[in-house]
Image (cartoon, rainbow, N blue to C red; front, side, top):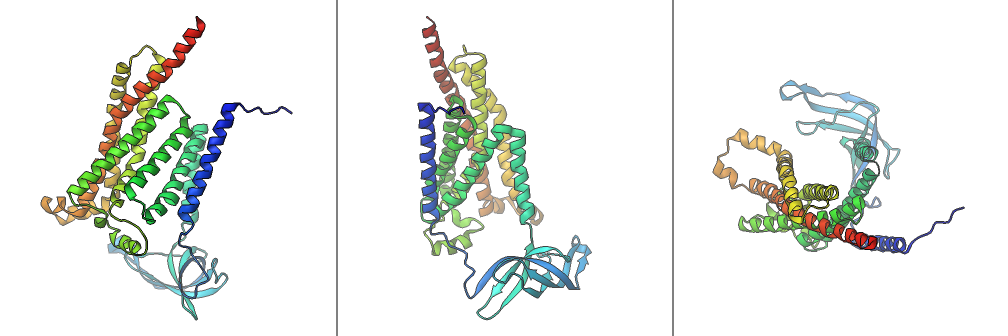
Length: 394
């Protein structure tokens, strides 16, 4: 059996990976060890469980033809609880319908039910359709598409994505709830996830170093710009739709709401910034590989031309993403005939404009940063091995 020999470089690399993973594990534990838990052993409260519809005892719903076929009325159901402390119990419940609440079911369907527990009894009401399997399947389809079509790079992309999600949901969120300053913490988490994601995709190469640096520059620029404009226009986290709920959370935690608006800008724009930074850096490295005689100035000019072509579509994508998330509000504003003066001075419009423009300007700033850094780093780092090879030849 052939023995596997590890070189000194491999030992150092794997040692660094192990240390970094250990540090990440320690950070995740510290951030989440005191996370509020979900306990089923309390005497009262609400629980959400899965149930199966055994029988529709009564269906008095009607279809409202004037309201796009939305059902009105109620259904009397017999359901069997499939999870939770009352698993196996069969109970009768009434499922009420309205314009905003339409969960129409048939025998054999599985639903999510809300169990309202008191000290002596409990009641069950239909909460929503059971979408768990479908939504998880949709996510799995996305990951499979990345791995099958992307091959080895697709697998690395999946690992980078999972790492980013873990850092955002299980590191950034609990740290912000613990009272850490939201904006610096978000910038730090974004920097770490950007570095790891790019290193997974390409290793320690000149284009990766340039892309990471340019991404951080673009994100920090967007953060500074959004902070300044938000300050001048008196926009803070307290004008966001979720402010009322966040205030309640802040009353029982160390959460600071004022910086959350800027954090949402950074998280929403970092993907587009990474995309354009990598596109320019990769193109510049390819140009240098095909024509090593190109100067830094020529590489920079080419990188800028490539960036200008991509910049318009990237900014367009980002602004349309924000517009799409607020499309229903746009319809309402248009239908009410709101005047420009009223519209431009509403909190919602100010928030969406700052989000869109700050993120787009982050992309704009990334273009010259990526072109300059990539042209200089690629030229400098790939020039040294060439010189060394020429010297050894002599």
